[in-house]
Picture 1 (cartoon, one colour):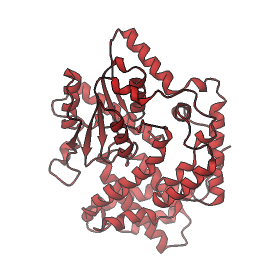
Picture 2 (cartoon, rainbow, N blue to C red):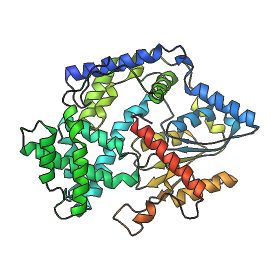
Picture 3 (tube, one colour):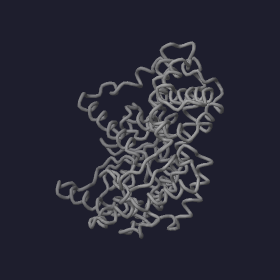
Picture 4 (spheres, rainbow, N blue to C red):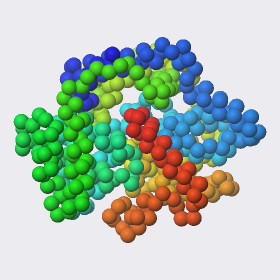
Length: 426
């Protein structure tokens, strides 16, 4: 059984010990599968090249999102002469160990909360009722007790708040809901019953001057009641992972060496990151790869990829899952790459977002191989409430897009949301 865990910002000896125990138990469970040594990026890349050959294609044409960028860069490093038109969307740092990407995520997540969603909320006090000081709004999360942080994180995951720019208003609502609920708990220290807390939330005015917004934010607060109370007494759980997460962890640990095989390294790093990035910083302590025993394959030199045909990279400026710092390191190491940054956005997965500028760039690239300059930008359309075009940016399809293409985009969006909701890192 896995030991009960509190939020990763709880750096007590007992909670850290539970995190280390659980990471080791999950890693051991994966390693018992006799197929585990064959589950890695190198095997997948070779399968993809076999498919290319069976289809009779001389070149490999590909769009990879998130981990798909690691996969695409591996292919270009192994078979540079076979690269055709390749798009790497929301790029990982492919220059070194794969777990570097896990370590960068808490910083990138906290940045979206502090530097994107909080300023947005501050610009619309009439909608969210939490003032006009972005720094104070950013401190709302830091003031939450750990059970509230657990409940907040569950709602953030459920609504893909840190994955899609068009969820920014929902993120501001969540901050407002957490602030109000925390105030109710402070004002009523004896509350230990979900029904009593729900009754108090019904009395609390979240946004006094906006009835509709007040109702929506109260609903988010009410959705946090049950996870809040459960977080006080987490329970043991079976040692099990979904198929998706089993493969994810196996690939991460099989592809490259761990940054450190000393569990105490990850404890110390978790302590430091929990202080700086409380939303998820402490989670880096859960490193399955520290005790995995090393990779099952050798990562090909990235320098080989430089001999491939031009590659198109797409990146949101504030991506919270594949940090832009890592994407830029990859870009700097790939002289044949052409990077398009979508400014004023944090969506993880640019292709599904129906940005006309990005769509035109991709279309030109796949149609005739023309790439933009070495580095260029596309602007994110205005955020909700900030332009009359807000309704347009929320549409599922770009102007002139076929119904089939719109459905494909929506299916891709749902897949990315499911991956985010599963707790996978990229």
